[in-house]
Amino acid sequence: MNKKLLILPLIAILGFQACKNKPNQSSQSEDNTAIKLVSPDFNADSAYAYVKAQVDFGPRVPGTVAHQKCAEYLVSKLKSFGAIVKIQGEKTQTYDGKTFQLKNILASFNPENKTRVLISAHWDARPFSDQDTNPANQNKPFDAANDGGSGVGVILEMARQIQQKTPNVGIDFVLWDLEDYGKANDETPDEITWCLGSQFWAKNAIATGYKAAFGINLDMVGGGNAQFTQDEISRQSAPEVVNRVWDIGNEIGYSSYFVRIPSGKIVDDHFWMNKAGVPSIDIIHYNDNTGFYINWHTQLDNLANIDKNTLKATGQTVLETIYREK
Image (cartoon, rainbow, N blue to C red; front, top):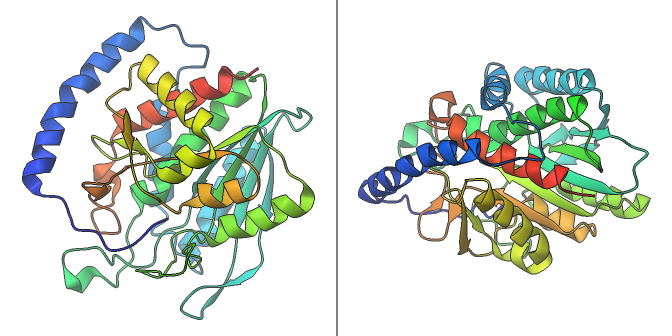
């Protein structure tokens, strides 16, 4: 994604935002009791447990034991939910000259259904906390609970629900590897040092003729008081999908999360999904005024800063979108 250095928002602004959003969360819970959902009830406790399971391995930095163990866990978990799972990848070089075995994890439900929806998130952890305010921490790995773990946790819970109640469409989940091992201030036109897993997948999707009705990428979807704005690439490449998802999020009680605010160009995995011909959007905690999630690429991106309310808002909205498809 667009990983250029960002100025951290003022504490006063955050305090105001937190106060502003907290009452909305409780009212959302009350509203949801009166809303008839087509989708199963997304279990935020379960999603949180899946985030914790990833964090418990340690930072999932490519080339580490934690990365390998987490890959095994994710494959096993998805298979246990009845998905057809495979690992996709090849030896891949990062911007700093290191080589890693790329491991995208692909999971499919209802493979015989020609109408498909693609949901994705990255599962790797960035090797360094280069946005940490303490210079002593900037070369250290971090837990990546939100930036990586949250999207995967939401996907695992959705997979569990899909096993129990089959939607009308086929579902493909992709967990991207080597998404977050990019160069700070990448000045290449498409920031090609980032999102290596989705770049590799896109080439293969084009070569094999993969088709999906639309795609949704999840990134940093577990932080407190999250705001998901509508980024430029999503609005330009998949405006109907943006409108549908944000409409559903607002309809079922999550208007404080799915805010109808346009934001700038964010080169995230959805950029490459669109390149492969799948109209795709990004659900990401970002605002042009405040930047990415406050603990982005710092030691504070840990389990203590994961909010089940945000996991619920994201997961229920995406599930409802999936189950409304015909």
